[in-house]
Length: 257
Image 1 (cartoon, helix red, strand yellow):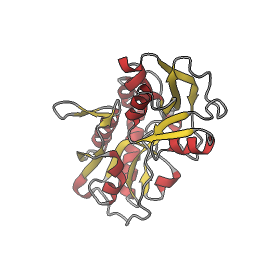
Image 2 (cartoon, helix red, strand yellow):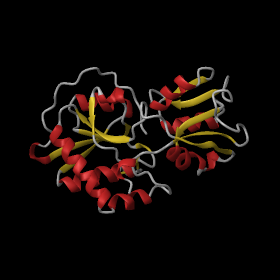
Image 3 (cartoon, rainbow, N blue to C red):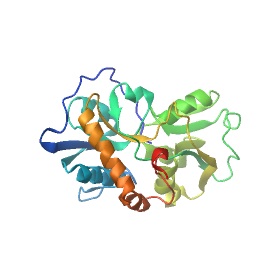
């Protein structure tokens, strides 16, 4: 679900992250319900729970390192941390500079607009309209390719997509089905807005689920992370964690029974 185009073209091959089983995890803290920071500085959310559960399975000594979203991949390359658990969507572009775990969740996209403003979201219906979307994201790429006659208003954070919509700076928003519901439609500021049409799953070429990112070549870490993800999905702990945040299934397709 989180999207940014890496500005980096090359990563140096990384040394394994598992020296002494000390693992540093890059997280954000500004993307509820996946990550957020309480007034006392405590990090919480689904990404944070996943990070802690993976660490417990690996029996690793993990440290959460808070990082602004736009600097996530550069900070990983600079060895500020060893992996990223921050709702990072797996894309072909990103796979050129990072390695990904197996997906740990997959959430469809949706359009949001004022009640009754739109009956659907075809390119013809949205021609000449301003669509708000997260900058440098697979959703933004999808809009640019599919809605050439619409204006695209790109913003820096997913929650800002809906704030801009509520402020009247666009006609319709395109974003995460989870964030649009939890951070907007279910909140007072979302009154008078609704989902337009059905949820939308982007094609595999631009949206491959959400994974844990690691430096290229860190195969030891990647193997242990994948084993840990498989374990929490098999023992039921993943489903219990997800149920605290979502009222629909976010399990990635490969792990669904």
